[in-house]
Length: 476
Image (cartoon, rainbow, N blue to C red; front, side, top):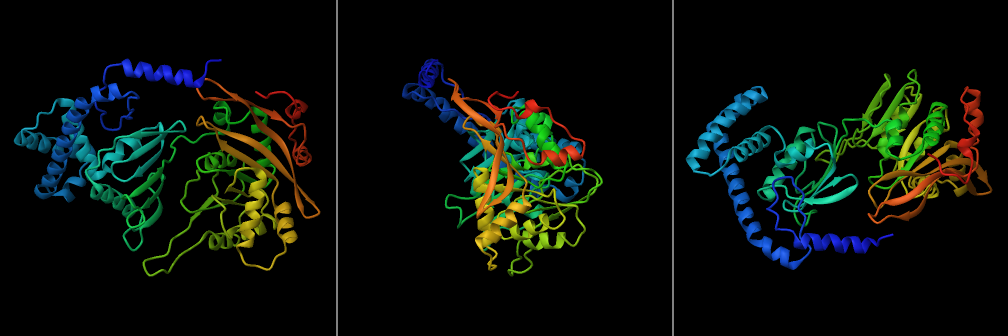
């Protein structure tokens, strides 16, 4: 097998021998040459491209300012987008001639699009939000931006004029959803109008300027079948998990940040019967349940006086008075875990939640810590007995080093033995190596243990072939 480092060296040699690339356009990934000679050759082109980009950016700011001063923006924004774009186009073309800017047709159209986006959209962020391949947008100050594509982070050029320009866009996003961000309240967590998750931290918290994180809302909801096609799990695993959800087995989705917990929760929730009443509780509403009877609730931060905060625990308590069949908690991370486990133990079997943890055993330990945060005088044994009687299935998700997301373990909670919560692993992902491109090689396999909940599924008429649980052979 060829060494990964040999492949990397060969790629660097090719890049060093290649002619210098032109400076990147807006939204295009910026890849730096690896050799000093290539970097030196590209320097004049970079300087010239930077001058052109700066000139166009300055012109856009000036024309936008003139547009605000000379045109009735209230009347203009009421027009249909195409008509508004036509009028802006005429105005921009006139000003470009007056400014004597040497722009070709493509550059002029791009300038018009930028100004329209600045007026009615989110300026330089609009192309990124429209790109379906981008899942995360990460901004560390106005001149340091990254995006995530296919699980990998890439640095890109986003043409913010300055820090004030980025801050205006942050305030536009925050104001549209009824939140605020300023020096007295420099942190904000919100849901954008399209459902994307938005988080911002500005000065004095953000040392180098506004820090913005946008987790984009996926318009194409991934089903369990699509996740099987992508290799996140196998068909037998999908069928067992779907049957467990249908049979009202309480399920916890565990994983780190960006591993796809919410996506998996959405996919599994499709197997909840349509005649059940579901109540969802989230910090920022992201779940896209397809059942007809869903009541959605969202937490609320405190106002400027420090009053009016509604935490997840308050909403969980209220949800239990709303006659739910199942309660679905977007993320369990605090004292609301106590009320959630109480609900799971008192007639709300089949409830679901996500939790941040690296293994199923760590997920149990985190739940113990959360129950301790309530301050109630509970012994360790009583806490663990609550957890053991409430939970049935723990699904562990992991984002591998090559960017792919997979279910690495499916475990069943079987009860208590002394003071220890007993678990048994049913399926797991086994890593066997890494290829020359850095892609993880591995396979899914059953451990040979049949889950105890099979009896309840069999009572509901759900049967599985014995080969689903045969150990020692890779599953497809």
